[in-house]
Structures are given as structure tokens and as C-alpha cells.
Image 1 (cartoon, rainbow, N blue to C red):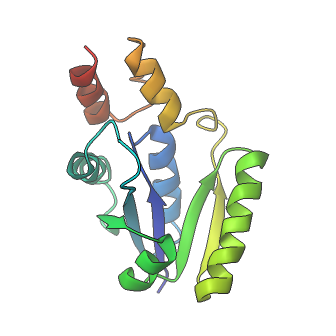
Image 2: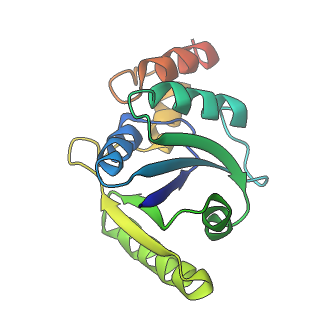
Length: 157
């Protein structure tokens, strides 16, 4: 049985994230979407709300579990009893950073990391771009799930 952890801040979750989750569900029996909580960052969307938005957005996949976690991803993987960490990559810059992290994680704990390339249609979408466009009143509805778009319009009408 393959259990996978897909960690991220998901601030906010995008259609690119959901594309990766859906593709991951085709190869893993259990998918844990881990909302990383970093006490040094001020997210636009609160932790509990990010978890709730992901739960709503992932209802089509019964093998998906959404949890929040603090600390090292490899420690969360160990606690959650998954076999592999999955990271989405959009470009070569991300590949190099994620490959280095994957090697460190394996050296520390033996946990493997799967680097899953973003689909071409979503490779340009990032949460930071969505936040910036939203702050300036732009329409991001094509790039985020409906519930997320509605929430963002509440923050920045």
C-alpha cells in the first residue's frame, strides 16, 4: 500500500495543486495533503480555513485526508506513516531546490521524495501570484476552486 504526503502552505490552494492531488490519487492508495504551518509566516488564509477549503476541494477523492502540521516534513511523514513525500515542480529552479531537499530528507530519515511535474496548463500558477493578483483586485477564478475564489473575494472585494 502506497501512502503519500503532499505538503504545502496552500495559501491559497490552486487548481494546480488539485491537478497534482488528482494525479497522485491515481498512483497512491492513501494521500495525505499536509497544510504546513510556519510560525514565522503570516498567511493570508488561516490554518483551519486552509484545511477546510482543501477538504471541500478534495471531496471527489475518498483516499485524500487533509491535516495541518508543524515542524519538519520528514517528521510529519513519519508520524503519518506514509511511504513517500510528493512535491510538485513547475520549473528547473524548483527542481534543483526540491532535489536537494529530497536528498537531505532521505539522508536524515530514509523517506523518499517523488517530484511530480506540474501539468503544462497549471505550471505558471502559484499561490503567491494568486495572492498578489487578488490584492490588486484581479480575477483569479480560473485558477482556484470556486470555494477559494469566494473566500478571496471576501478578503479583497
